[in-house]
Length: 137
Image 1 (tube, rainbow, N blue to C red):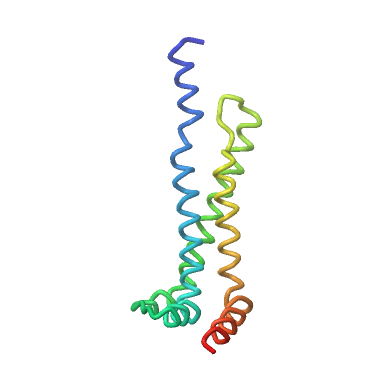
Image 2 (image 1 turned 90 degrees about the horizontal axis):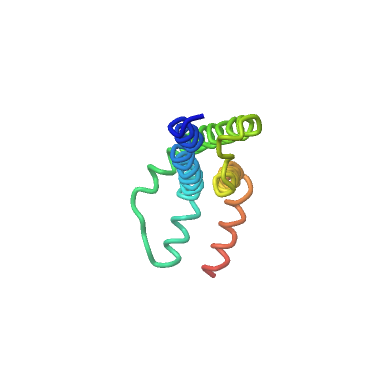
């Protein structure tokens, strides 16, 4: 093994990291966007009104909540597949870097956020609206 091939192996082992990190951040952002889109319908405007604030344009975001949620699910699914494939490859080939704990934690957080978005309308929204109504007096 020459020095140049050793450098090549190290680069190949770390080559996917920036793309995976970007994918993980995109999954978290998309999942947070899905939760925001579901909250934009009723809870967020009422909370802002209670605080004396207003935010125009929430109607459009609320109308696109299904697409936000589907996009988040797609990004998270791709992120988990990439992470699983990398972990499986690194068990066989010790020259690659295993998925980072931060990346796995980010995908886990994104998964929890998108699950929150999925249960928003039947579970979270009625509870939150009742809480806001009771705060208004």
